[in-house]
Length: 354
Image (tube, rainbow, N blue to C red; front, side, top):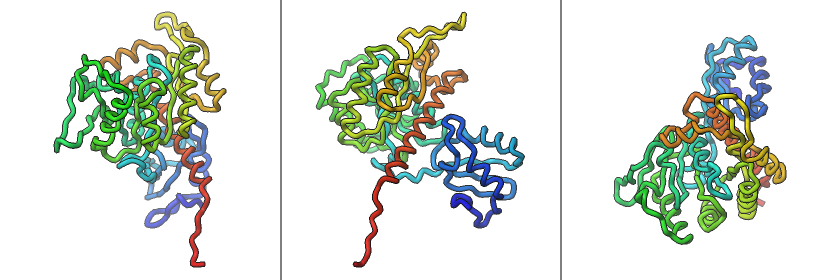
């Protein structure tokens, strides 16, 4: 009935199961699971589902839904990323950017990268903030130095399921990087090109704040898949985030979504909520530019404490971890829908002998 239901050397998937999987909706987005199915096999009592995206956190809710619907199968969930690599062994490159500093861009990039790895994806993280490389600290790698097996190419570090490269591994943390724009851009491209990246589903790039030389270099010299813009609700941050959105659109990089950081403060003692930096500014900006808000994160000291300790907040059993996980899933889906739309709009070229 559907080409993702396989029966070769396996049992035939019953029609009732096919209909269930066709209509079951993803918890975050409400999209039907059928849009992400790559293959479905039934081997005795084992239902083996292969997705087009690394969304392995769906295993538990999908297993529960199957049992609730009266199916006693044991679910095995996997994924197959058929996307062609666009840079070395990297299949997708996602820029995490902001118009100004101090909005939590690097914290978002770290937790997003780890969230993607928790879904089963192979993830790399490039710390492109040449002037303020903070990500080694956030991943517990402060003080580490670069390593090279042949004194030519650099090996990325690995922490919390993520491969990392940063200028922070090359310079003294107390030393200021007094570089002009072209020199900083050249250093960044060298860092990117001379790192032995493994096969990656996603390379998340933590961009420096602003819309200057480094941003333009990344946009023009890399096959960027899309960008995520981080802002806070206050008017000043929104104004700069607006410039970042405008810049990406000028260089034809799709905006995959917007994250509103420090959306509110929740008092730990009384539970009252205070919109310190304004109310729903990110939502209004997203509406103005017709982009999605992938998540709203609270102003919470635990996020800062865990970042300083080198343990990303997404790894801890706390409500904010669920928000980061949701943002990661929404980002993957946004990129998948964009790629599918682009592929559908490409004209079919038929070569004949005439």
